[in-house]
Image (cartoon, rainbow, N blue to C red; front, side, top):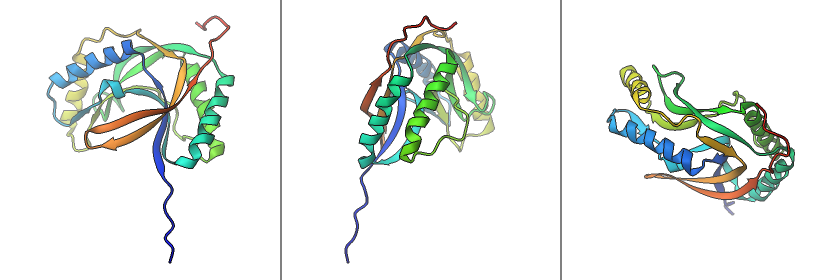
Length: 207
């Protein structure tokens, strides 16, 4: 009896990488949360924060060339633009937070359009479109499922009590990346497999 081997897979997602200035600002915020010594909170390493456009999950390695080609084609349908770091917040809200986050502001409709283009590129390859509305954000901490209501409320209070002077820090959306995530006991390791540069716009930026 012959045993068929399972295809090799990679855990992949598509995202925008943040510039050093934004990573530095988020790192200071996370350092402040760490100093609060709250229970039930898992902090994200600032260097691992991305603006995720689509999580693909476990992908057969044989699909990766088709995926990178589809993303390359996407570059002809859009141009680069710039967002800024926004206010701190929580999901679903700061009193019952499951996630602590930093929002984004600026040309958000263009970001939504980019996310839709990514969905359009991936769908013919068998990747299901996301049913939920696209809600871009940068996660700085996750509240564990076991956390009490009081711990969730305190986490939100700790976030809003920190000085946050980095609103307006530029976040250029000038490339997208296909990233491999390898889960380890020490946290995820990320490896960029493919980068697609977005062309410069010949038009003046929208207000």
